[in-house]
Length: 179
Image 1 (tube, rainbow, N blue to C red):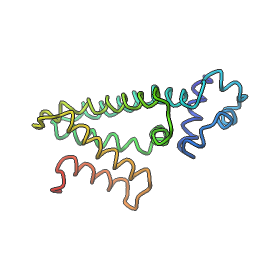
Image 2 (image 1 turned 90 degrees about the vertical axis):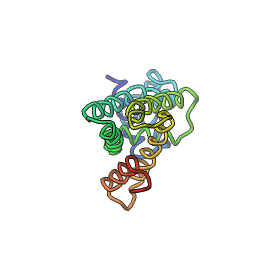
Image 3 (image 1 turned 45 degrees about the vertical axis):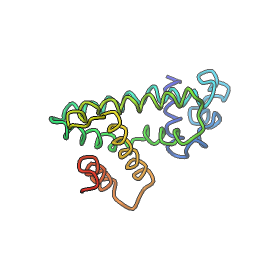
Image 4 (image 1 turned 180 degrees about the horizontal axis):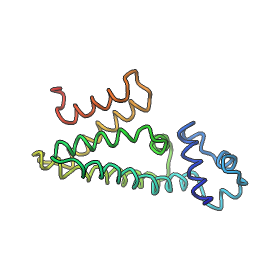
């Protein structure tokens, strides 16, 4: 239970103040634990980050996969892939990982984030192949770039409404620059 409370506090701190806010004293204060007790659960900030990735990325991936499975054809699957990921942007778990990815992380934490994103990219490959892409992995990585750019725009609180950003990302994913 304490580990879960620490992870929840870490998500809140990251989403509120970025990586600078994720400190062991702040975790201790949020959870009511002594600072030394936090070290019993995690050896470093990077260890907190790694565990957040291990816990949160599979949940997101399952949500994206579920949305894709509910879609009928390959274009619908691409649309579901984009929409599901962008719908998660408002989730504080996503805000925490965005804050994490912009920070200085050790190689283990970076690899976990890379592997999790790789799982998302692999998910869409079959639909892209069905749409006739000769290099579905490369197309999937470029598609993920569209999603990542849209997510950053939503996160930054761009002038556009998040729904307008989502619609633009879906349009770009399905029709490219031809609109």
